[in-house]
Length: 226
Length: 300
Image (cartoon, rainbow over the protein chains, first blue to last red):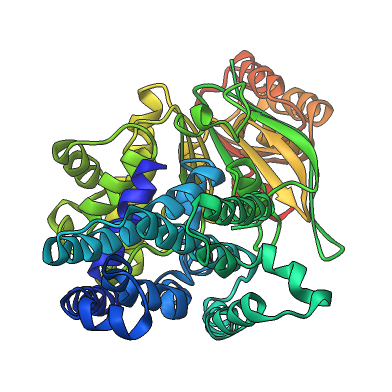
């Protein structure tokens, strides 16, 4: 599992797309911290919240897109090109899947941590709650993309569905948070964005959703032919 | 001790039975050859044994353990039939990654040794994307042996290689066998199988139709052994007696001055014939026996 994770982590850093996304993160973090004061007064936020609002906005609205663009073919590309045959004959399928998840997760953890570190250095404030909330959303997004990559054999199709999901989820999530319609408002509990409205640790539920997705992906992957 | 034990293994794809209830036992230390035409089900059978595909029914054990167990996977090496490598990764990096995946991370020197054994040492730092088909095959063999496995599965290990590389890989297989490794290989090259394997199975339409050592397979097909005897001139006084005796022992007797042909049904009759010639005061210079080749057995 560790060997797979390590390879996945370093492979992600090699791509141009990943470098561009990291630069976008860092630039957003820098300017978000720099203009935290004015933003706080406009958006009625505390300076602490305003400083990380930019990065959080990026993850909430574009996180799924970023994760999809980098990792949508993490599993099915290897099956499609038959490199997976070397992996499944050397280690268990669960180790491959968890290793991939671990590698991608560490990549996003490092990227997000660096962004928050820059913000903390500039504003001299640390916001652990928002960092963990954002990381939990990224965890769910990674689990979703991996699940998609196991369920759909063709890499081009996962890219398509990943993109559709990237557009639909923030819109649907935002709508479910705001809607007062009692017939569908109960759906807000399965909406990850709902837990970001709360200033507590109920976002742990999002990690549970991620766990369910990875568990399902593992069940399917164990039966899949490589 | 048993290295591979398969019981009633079957694989069905979309209603088509590709592997049909195979029972097989391979002992430790064997080089077991699997022969069959394209589509006979050889690769599907190997893929099931190595965890690439799941059997529709039946069961099997490798090294007396469950193939899904990581502990067992670490003791086997697999070269799948058709696989590509990571295009932007070098041969050396491949071996380091695969060895760490197998739980025995190999040092650079060990990786170079494996590459040397397959004749790829000078291409160690070349990206696999630039490899020819034959070079990829060699890297396939190297990655299968890098973690020093007890049991090796080699699916068409020499196909697509040049003659020199074929000899090098065949020597490597023999040296691995001498070190006590069990090798299960498939090949289209009948000479290769005949030369390397201690036991052979011939697969047809998803079933094993023949199995045994080369001698056992020959014996099975050797109902008609054609014996050619080169001898000195038979004394006239003995000629009639010898001719009659030969006709009683075999069929298609062509009795000549210095050359006699006879068809017999078992080996021990050849010894009796040579004794008969000697008893008739005739020297025997040469005895040639026409045996069925693996090609003839395979095509039967």
